[in-house]
Figure (cartoon, rainbow, N blue to C red):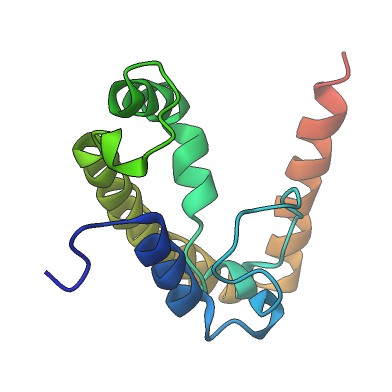
Length: 135
């Protein structure tokens, strides 16, 4: 009930709260995304929730839900939108994003246990797969 009704202001507040422990996000916490994603180290991946990744993975459903909530029309009054399906979509996105944290944290911990020679072998596969994609 604390977040009901789930408005843009509430969502921005949640975004700000989620990013408050990530100092690099101070300048954009609680705002719309304005920059494209950059490649980051595994240490950082485990320390925040990647919501964008989940939205990208579910892009078709995301646009369907947006279509449903607006009925394909712009409404000058926010209360005219049916946001229930959009709310459930974002709850699902948050759930999967949190699951991603555990997945990437586990993956990073396993990588930390590899020997230097094993890491070099793994890196060579990464380089080889990039080279192979050129053909």
